[in-house]
Image (cartoon, rainbow, N blue to C red; front, side, top):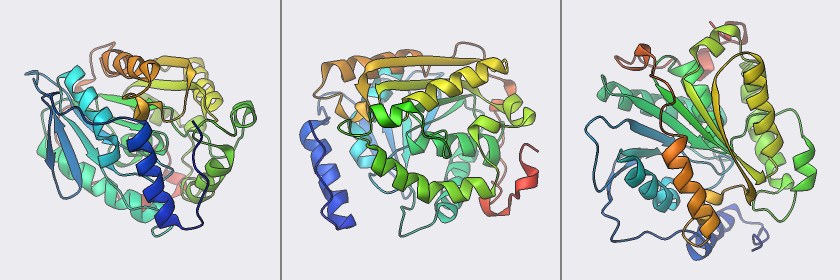
Length: 305
């Protein structure tokens, strides 16, 4: 499988990317019993059977902040919801280059915060893949600290400054190539640098506020090494983290679970392991949610406060 080359038109590239996934990736199983409730800013996937004490999962999709929408992730999210017996709500956000990271995260933060307030008293899990993982981590630590009982990061973007060996080893032919990732990094890095938000340099206060954390890494992925390095980084600081590694799978494998048996098995393992608490969630994770602070208003010298 090889990802088609760029056409030179971003609009056409976006359409081609979604057609590619629909053709070679997952398709919705009409008999899975799940249902989708569309909203103005999100889609809620409800499982065929919902557990009485189920967490509510708030999901932020990947795509470099340039590609994709919740709709293309629906087969994966339906599988996740049915396995967890929990609703999974996928949020869309403004895309680059039409919008800045500041505009996107400011709007996304408002929408996620409003949803969390409406779910006061319920256990909340925030999750995301690729750049959605970075966004989820930022929201959990800077915008809505103390709100989530759990955070799940699937092959996340974590280091916008360093290219490790996996950039060279898996830089082409594994869905996310190093050239595309450098483009995404050029869009993302200035925003996070201005706010001194670096997952590898979190303050003691931010590490203390980290929700129960699970991270998934893929073995054939330019982002592999930074994910593994971050797990070690947290371990050295005595921050508990649950790590699942799938050595033979590429970036974005969750989108291909409908056609690849290995990806389907991995998605099932993620749902049964990463999203289940390994410890009792902190009491602070349940309760009222304040209005989020605008990302633009958080100066660098307030990192970790």
